[in-house]
Length: 122
Image (cartoon, rainbow, N blue to C red; front, top):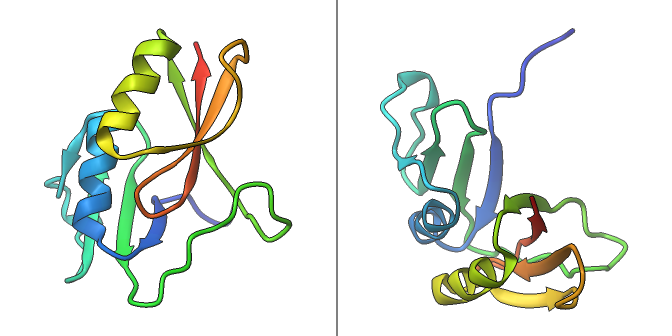
């Protein structure tokens, strides 16, 4: 092993805004107290005890990925117990539906900065 994953960093137009979106989706604490995860201005960190750490970096010329395009590089999967309630909740947070039907075990959305994520039935 060469190293350990510290966190996943998402580039976006507004780090604080996107951190708040993911806090609403996943819970956790923005600007967690762990000094090892301190970030500079224009950045934010979302920590959840025992969960993955997401960091957000403001980038002036951010271009969102396009779901299904060859250059798309990744998406996040979020397990949910009630997909219908989760669908309504993420739309209320500002997510945009991208793909997946009501009968599917998952649906794809874009966060406010355009990054794709899936709500997956638990």
